Image (cartoon, rainbow, N blue to C red; front, side):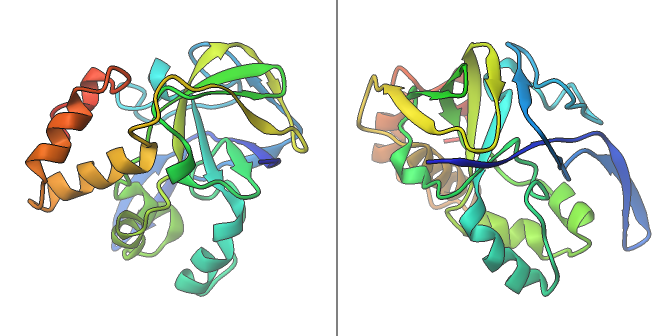
Amino acid sequence: MKVVSTNVGKPKNYTLDGVTISTSMVRHSVPDLTINKLRVEGDEFANPEFHGEFDAVVYALSADRYPEWEKFLNKPFSLGCLGENLSIDKLREEDFYLGDEYQVGTAILRATGPRYPCNKLNYSSGDKRLQREFESRDWCGIYFEVVQEGKAKPGDMLTLVKRVQDQFTVLDLYQAMRAKKKRQRDDAKSAKLIACEQLLEKYHKRV
């Protein structure tokens, strides 16, 4: 998997249906990322109490799905507009197991979970359908915590360096969270997922 764009964002105001909010959802391309333990340099958040946690410092998303989003929105939609720091040429959530460690550039990152969409997607895109559509697809992207600080740039490879379990993927967690929200939870599957040592405590109630 190859990095095709590295992106950072700062809060901007967006208005939808007469309501204005501030969000850094839309990120812009930069020549490289400096990835520190607690933040990516250049990233800022409108609500830091809810974003920028140590276990979700870096967000990666698949670049090859952007044409589908452009088709859905019926307008150009550039890499970074869905909030990712790393736009990867072809990323598949079912390939990332919870706890996987990946090297990108000189940084080492650990996969911790999916991004569950909030309504800020609607504001930043100007389309009030986007949050629901994003939620319905299995294209959630990957959150990472930082094991080793470093730099990453377009052209770098995202390479698996350590796998600690092969039972539960980021996609499994996302689907379980979505099922819980829709009151369609599979209790047996949820119990097995909760027993996974690599599942962060913050996800327990959400599955």
